[in-house]
Image: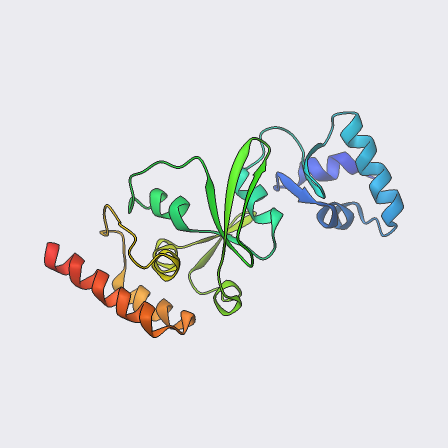
Length: 192
């Protein structure tokens, strides 16, 4: 039988919940599972990032950790907007859409969770599966942001696909958001 640690190290994931480990190790006895995890944490083979969340080494992906803290969740807002070049301000914090609002520090990283309504959170339109975590497309992140912060300032809206946004905006079921999207599009067109 393959060593339990080898199974973890063969996985492409860098962050594991207790449930992930139970599945990988095919361990159904919770006491055995906790005992094994505790042993590997004590001997330094596993790193405990927070209760019930572990990394195989210090080179774990912080975005993977972000979406493991609260499930379901996906990377969005400033994190995606900056990567897409829509905002220029650098943030060390990772911003995540979730079912609750909370600031969390874990593994030396700051995470900002923002509550978004269930109909939006559970809708996968505009959500990209990025190996071991989910993240919003730039258009979905743009809509998430103006949904929660109506007057948000963007440095550059060249990356926005307005047609995709007009499709995605329907999932929010919010007339004010449709109006806001139209106002941002008009400002963008007028500036060109």
